[in-house]
Image 1: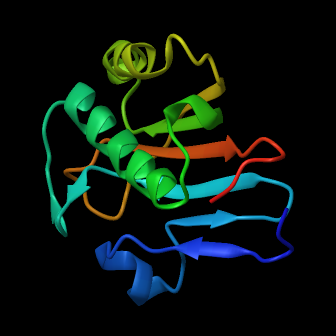
Image 2 (image 1 turned 180 degrees about the vertical axis):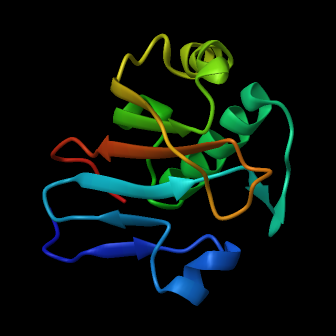
Length: 134
């Protein structure tokens, strides 16, 4: 396993402005994916809470793919949403994406995001098994 910390950028509008990476892989195989929203090609794709959740997780999956990992490597998810009324829609999207993976998961209600049309943000942690390569 490498001793190098690897960083992935997605070109999202806030990465350069705020100085962060979309994903960071640590020596030992832990991969941390920053908060992802329904921003597609630099524009907010504000759909339903369900659609925003699917889009946000797709942003995370794209970052994992750049590191040679997939949905099956996800070990933890965090879902932040602005309204308790959206819990079922966000949960349904999570189940459809992860029912066969079953990561540890948290869902939290927050007061808002950088743009009020966003109602969901997700974080993902993944793990590269030893012997895995990038």
